[in-house]
Image (cartoon, rainbow, N blue to C red; front, side, top):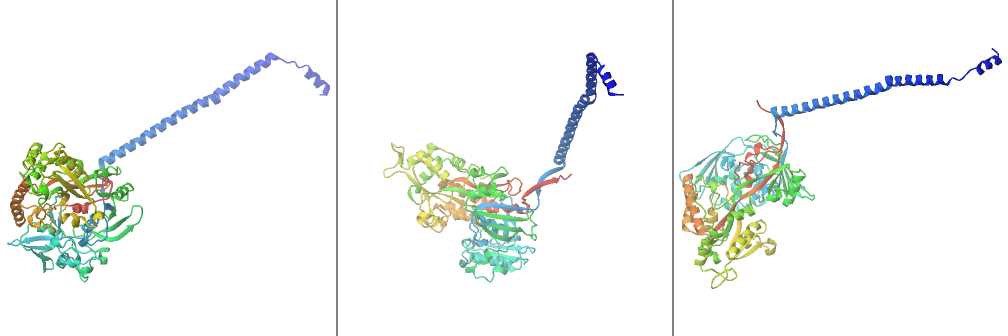
Length: 598
C-alpha cells in the first residue's frame, strides 16, 4: 500500500463520542468488579484474619492464666514456704568487741559471742529453766553444801581436744584469782572446785545455797591452750581475738569495718562436731555498732538478718521485711528509796508515795510492751503461782492522810511543808540508760501531790568518775531509778538483805528489816521449792509494807528479725537477753518452697 492510499483511508475515519462513552463505562464497570473481586474482598478477609488472630491470642492468654492459677493452686496445695538449712544469720547490736574471752565480757556483743562459742555445765531452755549442757547429772550432799557434777564424754573443743573436768576447775580458778581481773571474781568467792575424775567435778560451798546451780552457766575455757598463761596476762593474750571454744559455733574471723557505719564483726562457722547436733545455719555473724542508728541502717541495707534491743519507736523505722517482738527479761526497773537518809527515812512518806504513784501509767508511757512489776522479783519466778501477795491499790486520799500524819501540810502554793522545810526529793538516773520518760512521769505525779522534785541526770564526764563511784557507792540520792538484774532464780538477797547495805553492796535502798532478812536467808538455804516459795512470799509481803522501792516495770528487749528467718520464739521465757539462743540449733536465715508431707 502506497502512502497516498493509507492517508486517504485514515482521513475517512470518523470520531464516535457515544461509542467512546459506552466503552469507558464498560471499562469502569469491569474495573469495579475487578476491585471488588481482587481487592475489597481481600481486605474483608484480612479483617477476618485479624479478628481470628485476636481471638486466638485471647484463648492463649486465658490458657496461660489458667496454667498460672493451677500452678499457684498446686503450690499452695502441695508445697509451702518453709525455713531451709544453710546460709548466714547476722545479728546487729550496740556494743564493742574488745575481747572474745568470756571472762572479760562486758557488753551484749561480747556476751552473745560467748554464748555461741563456748559451752557451760548448764544453760536455760525455752521455759527459762535450767537444762543440762555439758553436765549429765548433779548430786547434792546431805549438808547441801557440796554439788557433784558429771560431764558428758563426747564434748570436744573446736580443735578436736576432749573437754574434761580439768577445764572446768581451771576456769573456776581463773574466775576466783584476783590477778585475772575478771568481773566474775566476787560471785565465786567461797567456792572450791576440785577434780573427782576426768568427767566429774565437785563444788564445795561455804554453806547451803539453793540458787548455786544457776551459777553453773559460766563459759568454760580450754586448759590445754591457756594453762601456761599467767593469770595477769590472760586478758591481753591472743586468745581474746582468736578463741577456741566448744559451743555450737567456732571462731573464723574478727573484722573491723571503717565506714560511715563503723563496726566490728565477729564471723563464726557452724560446729559440725557439736555434741548436741549440727546447727541448721552455715554461719553466724555478730555486728557490733556504736549506736542504734547504725542498727536501723544495717536493717535497711539488708546487711543483717536481725537487730537486737531497740525501742518501739526505732522499730517503726525498720523496713517492712522485718518484724519485731518484745522479749520479757527477768530484770526490773525500780524507783529505789534511800531509807537511811532524808525524808524517806520516814516509812509513812514512802507508804504515801506507794499509794499515790500510778506505776501502770509510768509503764505505759515508758515501756508499753513490758509487763507490770510490783514485787522485788518477777512473779512468774515462783513455782507456786498463787502468790496472794499484792501491791496496795492507788489511793490518793489515804496517801495525803499519811503525809499529814507525818507532819506535812500543803501551803498556799500547793507545796508540802512542815515547820522546818519543804518536802523535796532528789531523783538520780544514769545518763547512759534511758529512763528519762519514767522519771518525767514520776516527777509529774509527785509534783501534783505537792512534792518538790529535783532530777539529776548523772554525766560521767562531768564528775570524772563512773556512776558506781560517784552515785551508787556513796548513796548520793534520795530516789534512784535503776534496773536490777534478777536472773532465773528469785534469790534477791544481794539487793535487799541488810548485810549488803554498805558501799560495796548492792542494797541501794539501805533496806533493813529482821523479818525480810530472815526470809531471804532461809530461802537461799532451802532446796525444797515449796518451802522456798513460802519464804519469798513472806519477804515480798514485808517488802510491800516497808516500801524500800517501787517497782515500775519488768525489763524487756525488742528483737526484730527478717520475715524470711526463724530465730527467737515469742513463747520463750528468757532470763536475760544473752539467753535468747536456747533454740539456736534450729535457727534459720532463709525460706524456700518445699513439698508438704502427706
